[in-house]
Length: 272
Ligand code: HEC
Ligand code: HEC
Image 1 (cartoon, rainbow, N blue to C red):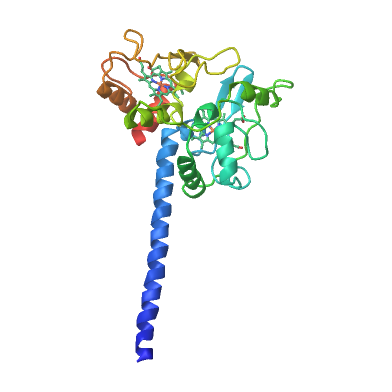
Image 2: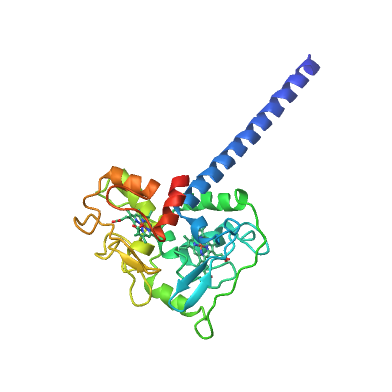
């Protein structure tokens, strides 16, 4: 009798274990897919890929007031990319602009905005970068800056003055849609890094709606990134929700068409 049950018990155990394994894998896949979606919302690929280069392997030049710097390889290659980053180190790079070895990143990497990304989304982004991105071996390029401008320690001072630490907190009195939108726009979307005017030290003059300058328009790469507030004449006051959605998905609507760096934001939004 006892023996007759054995295969059944073994089969049940095995199917139970398999079931658990495949549901764990499904959860993993879902996490990686969510991370991929968030990486698109954050436009990581637009900056971290060079024209005709491999996706996310870096090398795109970015002008700063003190010279050109190059985006880095953020594929999971252990030698030249971020394959050896722990989740904590990854989160610190995104939220505080500090690389694994402790050097400070230039705020051309929009960490003042990414500071608002919550833990859950950070976890999904990390899962995606480690498991969903193909590793590419490609060494990072040194910035085109001469001493003393290439020193990174002043960035610590910059951070102490301008970096607003702390993830996005829902604003009371605003509904779920408003808070979701504000979280995406101020955080991952980093819309203000182009649409908010910059001050003397290249800092954005305001990182959320509490500042009158937030999203009122900024000059970058010689393009003027428009006023996105609800102001009626120069802002988006006359745009409907459909107008904004059409513009972000297709790059054009009855009011405007996209050019300059906004086109990379749109081509990524369209892929979503
Ligand atoms: C507006 C351009 C821009 C966008 C968008 C951007 N980055 Fe960056 N990122 C940079 C630049 C520039 C650097 C290098 C800065 C430096 O060397 O000081 C960098 C550096 C990094 C580093 C440090 C890498 C290293 O080699 O140590 C990580 C990690 C990183 N970015 C991840 C991301 C992720 C994830 C996203 C999307 C959520 C993203 N970045 C979006 C410009 C950008
Ligand atoms: C890399 C810089 C950059 C980022 C990041 C960026 N934009 Fe733009 N955006 C621009 C520039 C430059 C323009 C003006 C040129 C144009 O109309 O294409 C623009 C134009 C626009 C317009 C058209 C406004 C008008 O009056 O013509 C809208 C709407 C817009 N952006 C929304 C957004 C939103 C929402 C985000 C965040 C998800 C965002 N942008 C992020 C650079 C950027």
